[in-house]
Length: 258
Ligand code: DAK
Image (cartoon, rainbow, N blue to C red; front, side, top):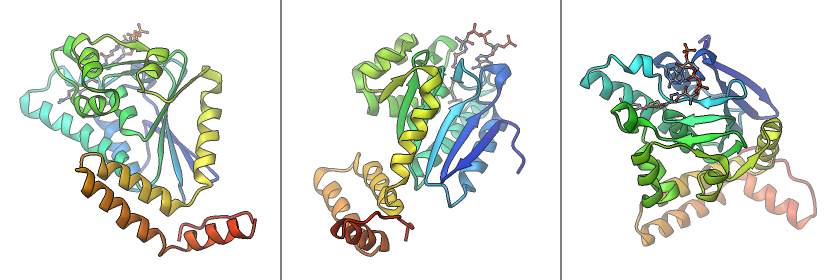
């Protein structure tokens, strides 16, 4: 599939995916969401870490496309919300780590797509917010769910009820992002983190992601049993044999993901 709204670059197993709708500050229209769904369903198996960013130096994603949403009826609104939510869920279910490199506005659906990623870092000019109630709607791409998980109910309610964006330093303070960098450093820092991650065992990374996602909503005994089961499965991999052999023999290891 030829993409109109996505740009991709692959280097050493690290894929940078740039969301690109510059005329609307990279707002998420249906065609962009369809392309993103297609990309995630067909991701190159050689990709070990995915970085998602926005085109330009002003905006990551300025939300769902308001022009497109403005004429929807109830059923169409439901379908539009479901399309976005389903695509974002694919990010969470990818068997590889995903880093959001937030390079400016992350409003509405922009904040929501960042929250579906495993790790968020941002530029100093980034702004995060859920301004939907000011448009007569609620966050519709799973924002009420993920923001509450990430920053707690009190702060999530304040952000969603006020609709007021916060700056990068406040996003860092409340744990919505892990680090803030100058704009010109953001992508090199994202790449540095991606390289560190991609040097580790791919199957172990996949299992770690699966555990963290699955265990979050489970009661303690079930969560611990789940981790125990996945820990055991690691010992059926070549990566475990190679990783431990290399450590004991003071050698470098290159994981093959087997
Ligand atoms: N959609 C469409 N166009 C947008 C846009 C958006 N979200 N954001 C910006 N644009 C367009 C502007 O209309 C403008 O277009 P032209 O006038 O040049 O044709 C161009 O991008 C540049 O924007 P500005 O001129 O406004 O630029 P400024 O620097 O002055 O302001 C801004 C930047 C990001 C602060 C401002 O553009 C802004 O406030 N944008 C809207 C942000 C926003 O409210 N985002 C949340 C969208 S709501 C659901 C499914 C999903 C959702 C909800 C429910 N279901 C159906 C259940 C999700 C909703 C959202 O994400």
